[in-house]
Length: 405
Ligand code: SF4
Image (cartoon, rainbow, N blue to C red; front, top):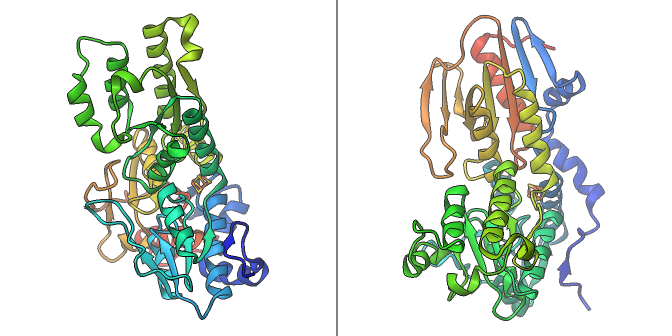
């Protein structure tokens, strides 16, 4: 019987290795890394954060996607959403013949009507919702599951909350693929509930309600505010009595921890410190790769460079958080890729704010002259070749010819 579900690759890792190296490797980046993450180019110092770029989950997802195109050259291959939030990687997959399925803007639902049992469907590193997984299984197509192990860990937490009668309070973006998939895991138990908070301000609305503060929203206003961010029929009077905290793996770790601690204090306030164990659970579910990239930036900012360049898709949650961290210490530019840097005109296109949909702006004369240290980091979905190209453009902006290291 034909194997229809692949979760551990397709046995073509060795064949794919040179393909991935040719497409995503950067010898310049490797050289700087080998020199202790710093390189001198005349009076310009380039510093790389000590953790940056592709994480283990993205490495694996991209590897499996390429293995899929080699294993099934004669079949139609679909991808649910984007494999990762990097435009360059997604373009390369499209060029390899993979068709991307996007959710309906109004309903958020994927349309699998065109998928048949002869097709191959890749599920991204973020995972898919329980409903979508079931629909794909019912079609009977070949499924390539690249869901990251760190995302699966969060799902286990949400499932255990639901089975034990706790509402999962998820720190994340309600529209993000990973958070939608994570929230859906509450459905593992009949009546499982979830509520999604974007940040501490939104968590505060939940805490005000738990503590029945005068400032709390009314029940109707609360339901209206969280209509798209909570499970169907969410009733704050009933569903905030027992709360377990989880998070989208790529949020700002410090904010996730602060929200969990604050929600714990709020439930202790409402039900008494002695009873809090019956009302509150929490596990830090930020993935280690996200944590390490954020820690590396914090370490770098002990002695901040004059200018920081952060490379990654504008819709990449972890890249946005890296840029946000950098802005607290120095002038930071979040760029999608090296083409944002116009060497001729000395300009840079960048996204100056945290929100994924914030508009890109153009800044002129963005690099000061003279002795200068420029720092770089990149989100977990940014391949090394895009970092290398950025370094080359930065140096070309400052110097007509890039000296070798
Ligand atoms: S950022 Fe973390 S959770 Fe997401 S794919 Fe990478 S390792 Fe997995």
